[in-house]
Image (cartoon, rainbow, N blue to C red; front, side, top):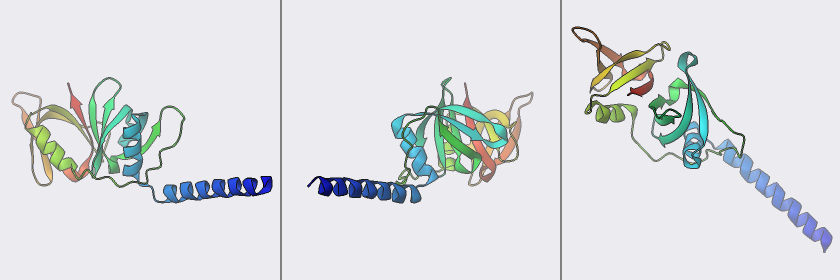
Length: 169
C-alpha cells in the first residue's frame, strides 16, 4: 500500500510538472504582464535606448501596458518598445498563459488623453531622448504635440514609432 501511495504521489508530481510546462509553452508577453499586474508586483522595465522604469503594471491592453512608477508617474509602454520586464523580488514566476481581453490600443488611449491636453514625453523607437510638449491631437497614425517655445511649434510623431509615453506632471 505504501508503494502504491508513493507511485501515486510521483505520478501527481509528474502531471503537475507537465501542466506547468504546457502553461509556459503557451505563455505570451501580454499574459505575463497581466499576471504581474494582478499580483501588483514591483517590476523593472528595460525600454528603448537603455531607458529603465521601476513601478507596478496597472493596465494591460492590446498593444501596450501602463506602468505607475515608484514616484507616481504614469508611463504607457508599447510592447515593441519593451526589451525586458523583471520582478524586483524573487518569487513564483507568472505563467502568462492567458489571453488579454482589453482591446484598447495605444492610439485610442492617446486620443482620450489628448482631450485633457496633458504634457507628455514621447520616446520613439529611434532614440531615448524623446520629444516633450503638450499632447494636442491624435489622428489615424500621427500624434500632434505643441513644443515649448515662443511661439509654440508643432511636432508630429508617427504612432507606429512610439516606444513610450510618459505623462509629465
